[in-house]
Length: 407
Image (cartoon, rainbow, N blue to C red; front, side, top):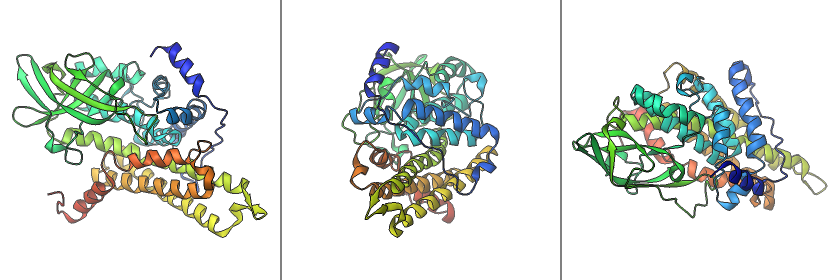
C-alpha cells in the first residue's frame, strides 16, 4: 500500500474520539523509574493518543490492519527497543521495552502484537543468533519499518508442542529445500521476511530467514477473526522453497532458539496486558463518575466502588510484578519460568478487569464508543498465544516441583 492510499484509508476511519488517559500509579511506581523510562513511555503514550486512539475502533470494526502505523511504530522506537542502535534498534533497557509495550497495548493488543513480532520474534533472533552479515542486511530495515517481519513456529497440528513440528529443510548444494506450513502468524501476509523454525535431515531444529518472493513461498491471510481484528494474521506455506544456506541462523540449534524468542515476547506481553487493563479501568472510572442512576453517580454505590477498588488493586500488583521482572531482566536474571508467571498473571488480570469494566458501562460497554469490548475480544487471544494460560501454569508447576507434567 503506497502512502497516499494509506492516508486516504486512514481518513475514512478517523473518529472524533478524544483520548483523555493520563495514567494510574497508585503505589508511585514512577519513583522507581529512570527519566529515560518515563521519556520512552510518554513518547509512545502521546503517539497512541494522536495516531491510534482516533482510528482504532474503525479499523477493528472493519477487520483491517492500519498498515501505515508500521512507520509510526518505528519512529517511536517500538521495533527492537533493546537491540543496539547500530543495528537499527533503540538501545534501551528492558524496563523501557516493557513500558513501550504497555502503552501500545493500551491502544490495542493488535498494535502491540505488530511491534512485539517485529522486535522480539524477528529482530531479536537475527541479532542474537544471526551472522554479522545477516544483522547488517536485515536489522536496519526492520528497525526503520521499511521491512516487515514475521515469526514462523506454530503449525496447524503443533501449537503447545513445537518440538513435534513437521516443517523440514533438506540440503541441496548451497541451498536447502523447505517444505511445510505454519499457522496463526501475525504480520505474515504483509511480511517481507519470515524467521522460520524447521527441522533438518537429522531432526535438529534450526532457524532460517525466508524472503517474500522466493518461489513456492506464500502467506495467505486468515479471515473471520473476532479477536485482534486490527492485526493481520495468516499462514506460512512452503512448497519446495529454495533458500540459501547463508540464510540459516548459524548460532543456535534446537528448541532453545525459538523458546528464547518467545520468552522475550512474553516479557513484553506481561507489560502490555497492564496497558489494556489500565485503559479499561480508566474508562470505567470516568464512566462511573459521569453516569447517574437513582439520582447520583453510579461511582457512589458500594458495588461499583468494590469493582473499581479491586481493579486498581490488581493493576497495582501487576505493575509491581512487571517492574521487578524488568529489574531482573536488566541483570540477565529473569528466568523463562518467571516470565511465564508474569505473562499468565497479568493477562488473566487484564481480561478479568475488562469484564468488570464492561459491567460498569452496562449496555454501552458493548459499543465502539468505548474500548472495553474490543479489549475483551483481543485479550481472549492474548491469553492463548505465546503459551496458553494452562501451559504457563504447568511451566510454573515444573519449575517449583522439578517434575515435567508435559510428558
